[in-house]
Image (cartoon, rainbow, N blue to C red; front, side, top):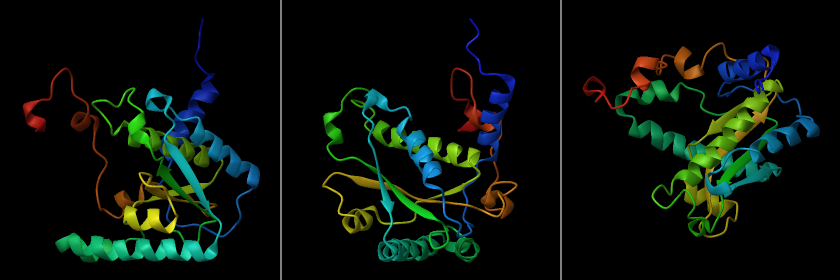
Length: 216
């Protein structure tokens, strides 16, 4: 029995994958509540190792709290620039987040008491983080299908953000997500068009059987 999607459905899935972008430019149009709920639902249906479902999502509705989160990101942006050495000036010219313009700010976090989950994590404890990344990717692809932009902000001190959001001991923020309407999606990843980096080809990323000497 053929278990595949229809051709149109397959094209839609691959289109969302190809056209997903890490967005930093938003307009201020509100996101419809039902669309926001679908994005959250997409995240909650992500795969997770041992079905531990380690994701926790904090929706930031306080303007004052959003301002404090943005200030924390800005502090880390300057520290990151200083750590980049000769690329500092180029980095400072990049727009790295859209927290002040986007309609919604979400903080994706790892749950506390993760050490209780051993299934699939005994030798690879970082699989909790991998599971949260899957939830973020689900949300990202759903956002693109909804015509919404999403950006992943990772410039912050996790201890500072955990304290600010009153997370329990052991919980850890992973990402600040900016969600909202955009005037247009980037034709290519912004860091590619800004010549910060280039997409790696299949020969650089896919090997057969063993890791080739030439790729070391």
